[in-house]
Image (cartoon, rainbow, N blue to C red; front, side, top):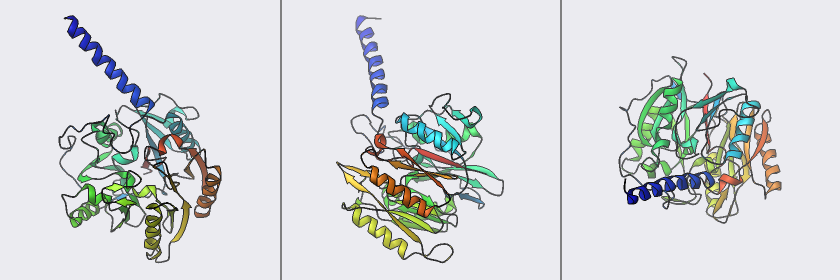
Length: 364
């Protein structure tokens, strides 16, 4: 090997270590970082033949019973540890970790499941929703196309990897969809923003809706506006979990802000639910919770996680008064559930908090 070749090899190795150091100290945001990420220009690679689930399959509402919480260990370690401890102890859920530690303090060994699935980023919510096939009493995952598939190949393959390791059925879906833009209740209602249509602009609205109904077995799709302009969401994502939270079949939490365009968008969401009937035919109980924009970051309390008898709510160290008010609002909507704050300072400026970095596995 020539000196030039040796030098080139050293440069490659150093570049690799440098890249990993960057990802460790500054994880990739929810959106694409054009400096550190480049598209490979290829179509989705992990796709198997599209195969919708049976009619007895359904997505499970977050406020139904959960078996496990999935976490991807690719940044914000302190926050992930707090989520794991709370979900495993107060929430009595298993903790499935990808690229994570062999053990977590306060989590029994039989509740800690480490899966050998590589990943690019921490945004576990977006890679594919899990549900239940009730006729066979088995788990299933709808493996949609992650919107950053051409940049983050490992993330796009996470659902099938988890399914392979845990013997879970996979239903491949030829639709670009982020899990953060997907909320369901127990009665066939799917709530999202119109961002899903933006991502799938080669399909008609009817084609997108038909695929959502075919694979998720939902009866009605509720597509809300997102803050910002088409294809330019003000929060960086356009996900519904950044301003709306379903607490149960009859109660919804909606962000309320003094900052535009979030102010108008929150009001439009409020008006939408005000004119909508609950599955039981009554009026929704609508709770408003503060959100605000500062220095380009959208701070929201709706990006929380319900795990059985506990709800994990993001908190922000410079806003103690708002944090305490958020606890009271959640307790009003969910009086029988414990509310626990999880500091989310580290992740919120990158486009997400607790809901964005977790995935739920429903209980069978």
